[in-house]
Length: 540
Ligand SMILES: CC(C)(COP(=O)(O)OP(=O)(O)OC[C@H]1O[C@@H](n2cnc3c(N)ncnc32)[C@H](O)[C@@H]1OP(=O)(O)O)[C@@H](O)C(=O)NCCC(=O)NCCS
Image (cartoon, rainbow, N blue to C red; front, side, top):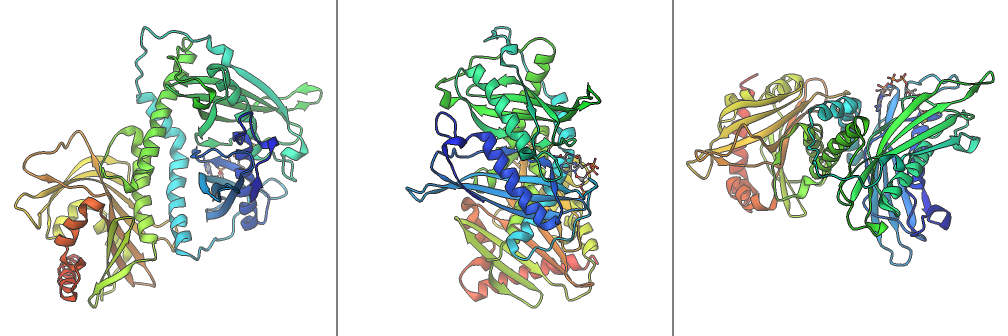
C-alpha cells in the first residue's frame, strides 16, 4: 500500500497524524489476512508499536504486509512501514507492526484457517518467530499485572501538582457509520485506534500546552466487537509524566439503543499511548502529582510499563551491541526469553553461509556480516536418531558435562517457567589455565508444527547471585544455540550456531583455528568437533 501524505493527513506541524497511520497499518494488514483466509477478518490484537521516524507532508508512506503464520483460527500479519522522500529519494523506517486477526464467517463464527506454507528462508524465520510472539501476546496481560504488583514507586514528598489531573481527562463519543466498518458491519480495529489516538493526543496536549508526538502504543487487545450503529465512548487521561514524555491511558466502551433504551456499556479495549513533548516547545515536564487512590495506582502502573518498554527496546536493539550480557530482572524476563529465541532463529534462518570445511558427517560454515563473524557446525549422524531424544539431551545444561570435554560443571541459578532457565557453567579454557565461566539464559522450544525445528538458545545475562570471581574468567555469548531438524523419518540434523562480536573475532579465529586460511587448519577444527560429536553420539 502506498500513500502520498496530503494536508488532510497531517497535524499543524505538517507531520502525519498518528491515528491515520494506525488506520493504514490495520487496513493493510487486514488485506493480507483476508487474502489468506478468504473471509472477512477482525483485529484481535496489535503488538507494541514504536515509531522511529516522523513522516511529513508530501512524503510517500509504503506499507508492506504479509501473513507470517496461521495458527488455528488466528493469524499473525507483519507490516513493515517506511517512508520515502520524493525530493531526496531517501527511504527511512517508520515502524514494524505485528497484528493478529481472526476470520469470521457470515454468521460471525470463527473460521479454521487453511495451512500456510512459507517458501523463502526469511519467511521461515518469520514463521518460527511468530510462535514466540504469540506466547508473549497471550501471557502479556498476566505478566504486566504481576510486574506491576511487584513494582514499588517512591512518591516524593516535594512533588507538586502541575494542574489537577482531571483537566487532562477527555471523553468523546463517536458513532460507528458504514465507512468505519467492513461489509459485515464490524468496526475496523484501526478506526478504533485512530479515535483512541485522537482523545489521547488531546490529553497529552493539555498537559504540555502544545502538540505532543505519538511515540509508542503498548499491546492492544480487542476484547469484543463493535458494529455499525454502536456509540463508542472513549475516555483518556494522563497516567504519568516523565522528563520529556508522558503516558496516556484510553478506555473504549460501546453501547447502542435497544427498544428505546440505552443498552449495556461493553468494554471493548484499553490502551496505553506514549507521547514525546519535544515538538511542543516545552523542554521538560515538571514532576507529576497524581490524585489520591486511583490516580496513584495509574501513576505506579505507568511507571512499571515504562520500565518494561525501555527494557524491551534495549533488548531488541542488542544484536550489535558491544556489551553482550544483559542484566536479568523480572521486568525484562519476557523480552529476554523472546530475544534469546529470536536471535537464534534469525541466525539459523540465514541462507548466506559459506562452507569452510567438512568431514563425512560434520560441516563447518562461517558467515560474516557487519563485522560480526558467526559459525555453524552441522552434524549429520550416520546412525538413526530421534530429534526429540537429541533435544532432551541438548536442552539439559547439566548433561553437557557428559558429552562436551570442555564443560567442567553446571549449576542452576534460576528456573523461569518450563522452557527457560539461568545457569552458571564452567568450561576449560583452550588458551589459559584459568577456566572460563558463563552465566547463560537457556531457552528451549519444541516445534509447534512438523516443519519447525527444535531449538535450544543461549545468551549471556548478569545475575546478582553469580558475581564475577577471581577463580574464573567471565566469558560472554551474544547468541548461540542448537537447532535440531528431523528431515524425513529418523534422519536428524543437529546444527550448533554461534555469533561472536567484533571483540571476540580474534579469540575465536585463534581458538577455533579451523577458521584460518589453510585447508589443513580447517580439518583440525573439524576433527576436534567430530570428537565432541562422537562423544555426544555415545549417549544414544
Ligand atoms: C476475536 C474474537 C472473535 C475471539 O473470540 P473468542 O472466541 O473469545 O476467542 P478465543 O479465545 O477462542 O481466541 C480466538 C483466537 O485468538 C487468539 N487470541 C486470544 N487472545 C489473544 C491475544 N491477546 N492476542 C492474540 N491472539 C489472541 C487465540 O489464541 C485464538 O487463536 P487460535 O484459534 O489460532 O489458537 C473476539 O474476541 C472478538 O470479537 N474481538 C473483537 C474483534 C473486533 O471486532 N476487532 C475490531 C475492533 S472493534
